Length: 99
Image (cartoon, rainbow, N blue to C red; front, top):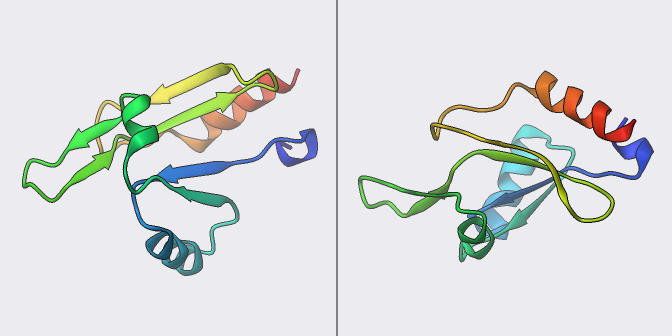
């Protein structure tokens, strides 16, 4: 549905490209993962979670739908590092965006 409309799914994470490649291969992920090893993008979006045990910063789970004009049309920012959005909710928002 999204791909047919010219859209794409892109994940941004603080892992290195080599680490991301392992994740893609292990879980057979069908979308691109972009490395933000310096956490620049994650910081710009205010999505840095400071690890309490000093293991380094990680990203707060978040989803953004960007419209064809480059504007954020919808966002979900998790209230907890381990909480993820329901994929069905994202799909519903994509359908609304494509109308």
